[in-house]
Image 1 (cartoon, rainbow, N blue to C red):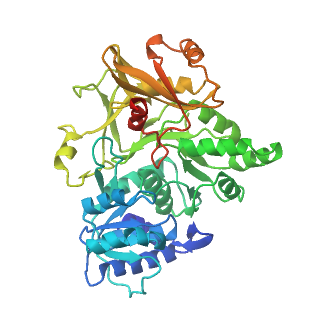
Image 2: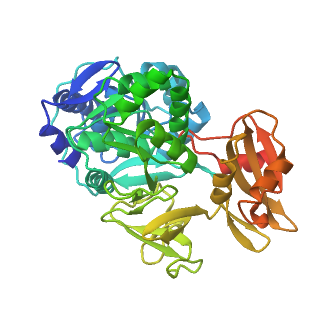
Image 3: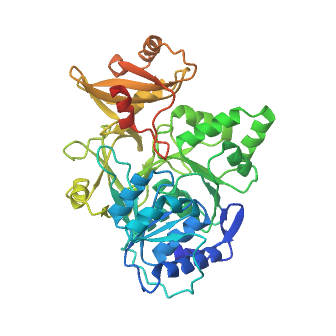
Amino acid sequence: MLEIISNAISYTNKKAIISNGVDYSYAQLLEASEQFASLLLETDADLHEARIGFMVDPGFDYVKVQWAIWRAGGITVPMCLTHPLPSLQYVIEDTEASIIVVSPQYEALLKDLTAEKNIRLIVLGDENNVAPKTLPDIDAKRSAMILYTSGTTNKPKGVVTTHENLEAQISTLVKAWEWSQNDHTICVLPLHHVHGIVNVVSSSLWSGAVCEFINGFSAEHIFQLFQKGAINVFMAVPTIYFKLITYWESLTEAQQQSMTECMSKFRLMVCGSAALPVSVMERWKNISGHVLLERYGMTEIGMAISNPYHEERRAGYIGKPLEGVDVKLVNEEYHEVKPGESGEILVRGKNVFKEYWRKPEATAKEFTADGWFKTGDVAIVEDGYYRIMGRNSVDIIKSGGYKISALEIEEELRKYELITDCAVVGIPNDEWGELIVSAIVDKDENINTDELNKWLREKMAAYKTPRKYLIVDELPRNAMGKVTKNDVKKLFES
């Protein structure tokens, strides 16, 4: 039996999920997922790793479907709720999904495509009651989930994780962040991404905690839920914290004080999926009383590095390797770098994914000969703490013979009082190799870039200062709020 299911059996009488204002117990979740697994199976005894796509709103139904697919022996393929039809079609065709499960509002979008390809379409709410069947025994080494990476120049790749991979990812976080059945969290993150699926939903339900879901994002609503006093664990991305800060600053002094007192009682607040500006971290600490716990992970590995739960959490650092995860820094020849030198992060452990879906060459390319996964991220270790310097492809700019961290420049630019946000990239240049440029969101629309550069040159070496600026209303971002650097480069091309 899958460990997340066996854990749930020991919590049957406890509240598991709050969805659309309704409470659901672990017993209800187990019963509903068992029944839906029987519906998926029909006359079969086992789905035998058939890919099951599902486009279901966050909440009880999402988890019911996810668990049902696993319990029936299938592979879950969570689909992004905001993707256009061509993107969804790519995932469906690439995985050769045999069944698609949708919330009613997505039926019209996928009805013609599934009919054309003779794919079974199940619309939630229309399913008839099915007598529970004997469910197959699922080996942990079976493939469990395919998540699609946000592609850059090529089509997105399907990242295949096994049940063993997921169990390692979840159990490691449960131990490191001390999850327990006394916790109550809220999911504000998309559920086609490892942050929401593993860090929030799966870790809470693995532990017998309560996972609450909301429809859409509203800073006001989130603060209202906070004030009820039940939530004690919160995980989000930098853009969400920034929006919460902006809303908090619009409140009266009495309301601000009440909110601060409420949040100070939380057990844990975590930030990830994108670089957290130190300025946002400091502002959130003043507002909530919490030093956000930054961590490092990606679709292929879950979480690998984290600031400690009890010890010092360092601003601008991603922390130390999690228990059971091997991490090392290497140079371009994949030899381990000397202490104090920066290098690419390599990761090894049970948390690391199985393969890219039906792409053996791409899979082999991302691993060293001795089995280390190449993250493509460059870091340095200082006093035992890892600090991200950038990404090989987009955040390390090679200009004038220097290797320059875009993140370092961005951190300084965000300290300038007229800048709301920024993104630094390198664009091809005959003289410099790459020219350092920056797209900036101007707070008052009257920024003087000459004065900005003069100010910046007082903070860092002249060769690190951008040669061109582009003022934009907002930066291009993906569904997780992460700035898409390749789209920023396109802004300069146009």
